[in-house]
Image 1 (cartoon, helix red, strand yellow):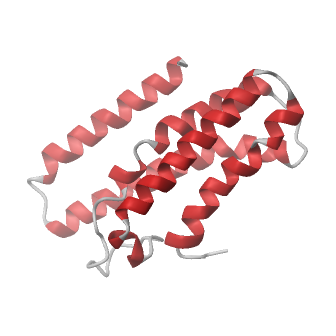
Image 2: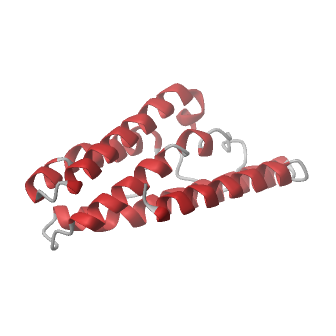
Length: 159
């Protein structure tokens, strides 16, 4: 596994442990705000990694190494999605979030959607590892669709 992926996973695990240990000293609203900040950071990092992949799918120069590396990162980060979406933040009006309230009643579906993202990110990475641009970009639809399936169902449409 890529050293960067391992380092990121360790960093996120440490952050999660730190959040858990300090959450006991926080008010419920502070806990909810911290949970939203953590999940925003996770999704921003996923978006950072999918950006170059999406650009390749739209005609940017193909770089198999970047495609594989970023997809493997996404697969690792996706394992954290159910945990990051486990804290119901819907009762706090002062906390901005794009999560729809329906997310809190569908944690099983969130876990399934996260698993689909893991599977599709790894399949994309495996295709990229071959260096075959056609096969790699052919696997992009499933990877992008995994993101869209969750966004379409559980995220406020700001586009």
